[in-house]
Structures are given as C-alpha cells and as structure tokens.
Amino acid sequence: MTTITTQTITFNVFRFNSETDYLPYYKKVEMEVTSEEVVLDILNRIKWEVDGSFSYRRSCRHGICGACAIKVNGKGVLACKERMNDLIELFGTELTLEPLSIKRAVKDMIIDKEDFWVKHEAIEPYLISHIEEHPEMECAVTPAQAEALLDSDYCIQCGLCHYSCPVIEINDDFIGPAAFAKAYRFNADVRDDGIDERLDIINAPSAGVWDCVKCFECAEVCPKEVNPIEKITKLHNQIFEHGRAINNVATRHAVGFAHSIKKHGLLDEAELVRYSEGTLPMLMKHGKVGFKMFKVGKVVMPWNMPKSDKLDEVKALIKSSSTVKF
Amino acid sequence: MEKKLTYALFTGCTAKESTPEQLMSTYAVAKKLGIELVELSEATCCGASHLQDYDDFLSLVLNARNICYAESRGMTMVTICNTCQLNTAMTKHRLDSDPELKARVNEKLAEVGLEYKGTSKITHFLYALIDDFGLETIKEKVVTPLSQFNIAPFYGCHNIRPSELQNETHDSAENAYNPNSLDELIIALGGVNVDYEEKNKCCGFHAELQAPHTAAVLTGKALMGAMDANADWMVTPCPLCHLKLDTQYEHASHAVGRDVKMPVLHMQQMVGLALGCAPSELGLQHHVSKVNFV
Ligand code: SF4
Ligand code: SF4
Ligand code: FES
Image (cartoon, rainbow over all chains, first blue to last red):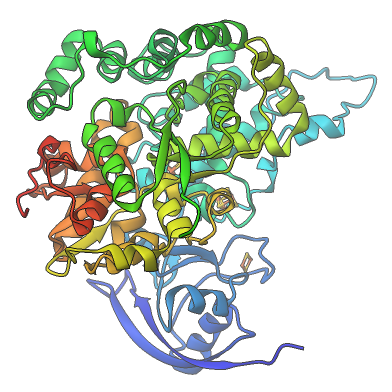
C-alpha cells in the first residue's frame, strides 16, 4: 500500500474577467496538496475554499469530455486526469495555472474556443458518401479498415494540441493539428468519398499542412495519443497519392529532397532552395543571408559538393523503392 | 582505463555544408575526450522530415540503409543533428515494432546486398556524452570553466519530442516540458544556465521556405527569450536550430519588431571551449553572428 503524503504548494493562478478587468493578473494561493489529488481537485478547492468567483470548465471528471483542459507551467493537461504528484516531480513546488490560450481568456481558466470549432468545421468533419438510397446490404467496415484510422477517432476535442501549436499563435489561417487529425479520420474511412475535397482544403497555402513547423508539440500533449503530426504526414502523402499537389514552393521542397539524394546522396542545400523557390525569388529572398553565409565559409560550391560513398546503391534504391511521382 | 568509446558517426548533410564548424568541433571534442568516431561515409540525407511527406516508404528504405552501415560496423550510431536523430530513431522504431514493414524494407535492401537487423543503438552525441562518457568525467577534464558566462540552452524539438520515442534512444530520461540534459552539461562545464520560456520551443526551421513569417517569429521569440533572460550566448545540439538562430536574425528582428541577435554556439563548441580547444579548431570563425567573447 502506498502512503498518502502531503506537500505545501504555491500556485500562481491566472485571474481575468473580460467583462470587468482591463488586464489579467496572477493570484498566489498556498495549499497543502496530497499525493492523491489531480489538478481538478485543486481547481475545485480554489473555488470552494479561496474564492467562489474562480471559474473553469469541467464536466465528466473522467478524461472524456475534453472540457477541463488548461496549462500548468506551460504544459497542456486535462485537469481531471493529471496527477499533482507528477507535476510536482516535474516542476517543483511552485506551479502556474493558466488557461489554454491567454489571448482567448474569457474568465480565469475559461477560453473562447471559437477558432477551434471554426477550423474543425472547415475540414468537413463528417462522412461524405455517395450511398445508394435503398441499399441492399449493410456497409460493413472490417477490423483492418477500422485500424487504418490509426486512433484518429479517439480525439475528444479538448483543444490541447490546437492551443499548444506554435503556428496557431502566429498564423490565424492555420487549420491546426486537431482539425488535421479529424480530416485524416474521414479521409481514411472506407465509406467516405470526400477525400479530394478535403485534401484541397488542407493543401491550401497558409491554412494547410505545409505550414506545420514539425515541432511535435501536438503529439506530445495529446491525452488520447491521437498523434496529430503522424496524421499530418499521412495527409501530405495523400496529397501526392491523389494527385492533388499544387506545384508550389512547399511541394517542390518536399520533392527536392528525392532529387538531391539521387544526385549526391547528401542534400545539396543551395540547390534545394533554388529548386523550391526558383532562381530569382531565391536570390531576392535569400540573397543577402546567402552572401553573409558565403563570407564565413558556409556555402559549398557546386564543384565541391560532398557525395555519399556507394552512390550507385542509393540510385538503385530510389529507383526500386519510390512509390509516388510528382 | 575503461574500453575506448567508439561510435559510427552519422554526420548528416548540414555538418558537411553550411555548418562546417559543427563537424570540426565534434572531432575536436572527440579527440580531447578520447572518443573514436568512424564516419558513415556511405550514409545519405535522412530526408530532414520532408522526404517522408513525399514518399514515406522511400524515406524508410534510405534511413534503414544508413543504419545498416552502423550495424555492419557493429557500432552504436551517433548523430549530431536533432532531425537526423528523430528520422533515424523513428525508422528504427517502426521497423523494430513491425515485422511486416521490416520485411518489405529488407526486400528492397536485399537488392543491393544489405539487410536491416535492428542491432545498432542510435543516439545523439549530446546523450552519448552524458550517458556513456558521463558528466562527472567531463567535469574532471574541464580546463577553462565557463564560469563567466550566462548560457541559454536551446534544446531543439527533435531531440525532446516525441518524448516516448526519444527516451527509447538514451538512458537519461528527458521530459519535453522541462528538459535538463543541456542545462546539466552547462553546469558541468562550470557555466551558469539561464532559464527562459523558449528553451524547449521550436526555432521554425522546417517551415522557413513555405511559411517564412511563422518561422521568423519563432526564431525571434527564441532569441528574445534568451536576451531577456540575460544570456551572453545560446547553445544548441542541433545544427538546424543553429542555422536559424545564427543566420536569420534580420528576418527575425523584422518579424518581432525588435533587434534580436546573439552568439549561438553548437553544443560541441561549448564543450570544446571548456576543454581547452583552440577557437579555430572549433570553427568559431564560421558564424554569421560573431562570437566575440573568445
Ligand atoms: S507539429 Fe505541426 S501541427 Fe503539431 S503542434 Fe507543431 S506545428 Fe502544430
Ligand atoms: S487530438 Fe488530442 S489533444 Fe488534440 S483535441 Fe483531440 S484529444 Fe485533444
Ligand atoms: S472533466 Fe471531462 S475531460 Fe476533464
């Protein structure tokens, strides 16, 4: 049997009421925390014991409704699932409780999730199916076909990945990891006929998958192990497999790697930029930095490009193992 | 004296091209510590987290081939780039956990007389130093403690996330929300580690061409965070983060509306300085943001 221990913890609690406050502030609350408690217990106790006006969302208390998502010391958590002891072990005895997105705060831990739902809606999160009106048999999905969804259907729409994604903070157009994972969920469904439609939405510059910086924050934070970045990679693959790729800097950049590896084994960095951007835009956009890099010996001249040994092997493998064409 | 540490070095492309100082300093540090590095001269680009968007299977085959050459030498593969580390470790993980996929990949590799077995470990040089060489041993070798410097660690996404995969590859577990390997290395070298919010955040490198504004804001925020934490310089184990932070300060300054710039060192250069390597041996002359303190 494990014994219950108690520790004194200092919480810096984000407080803000968009109706009355001009600026948010942090309130210090000291508490005895037992090893049995989860974050939601603390939120409850702040409300019950310290200040009845403290506001937060919760519903199921079982990690399934997604309502209670907040951030503790910058780490996105489901309050009803996250054990206090784990957080104390990770961050020590001073913890900051904040809403998922400070700029969207409405009251204390409660945020306006409108952009999350707008993005969700944008990817057409439903089966688009040209089914017969009077089918003669059921539309069965085999276990293997269901597995192809790769757990993307486990999403509880808590918003943790969305509001941990750095691109969401910078680019208002970006659809974001949760909606991408949802797009994959329907694209991978054998009953769905909307894949091309959806691919065109998630392929758009600025909004689409190409603007992901590949930071893996979404994979790290998801409490349901949906692994959105894995689905984003799959969506990239679908774009090429379904011939929906637009000839632009983003797609050429991905394809350019195969060309470069075929020629040198290693990447020809300058050539990759030229291939992706085109010669003139490259010089205009990167010329100045390129020149600075050249001056300190950071640019390899074409005649000095290093090559991998046994390049014939690499060429043979590229020939035999390539699965898509652009 | 214990057995000499020997690794198969996967240099990646950047160390051979735009960050020559990284390769130089890796060898300089290895020499000082008596670590033997055997370069995987056959290795290709890992696809830098983009090739798999275009052709996932091809990316697996090429990465598996790289690992084969570490296996045939009977050595642990050591990477010096976070993205190489991620792509290679991810390939290993997928092949080791999916016999069917492994068989498909091996079918292709067999055509050129290779076989992926899964016998080599893969680790980043940062973790090789910490896990295998040991911080205490490094500490004993310090000749110039970095005690006059406030140093901002910049971890780089692909060494710390996804943590489940990363923690398979090295012994010292790292938490993506509060990583500490670089901090501990700084302390072992006698430096002062500074804490700032962006230390475990993204530099934006992988979206540089497609989303230049996003990438520039992220670089700007990282530099700003380190500056506001009173750092004298930053240090990173990733050459891609290095490129971004060292060369893109103008775009970054423009994007965040403030002049941001500071010297950024590769992890190996920092270790090398403390071990008494000459600045030229560490390639400090190859930086765009001048390293003006040595
Ligand atoms: S990996 Fe891409 S989608 Fe996921 S959090 Fe990072 S930028 Fe956002
Ligand atoms: S993918 Fe995961 S983190 Fe994102 S909304 Fe769904 S459950 Fe939450
Ligand atoms: S209260 Fe429902 S997930 Fe936490």
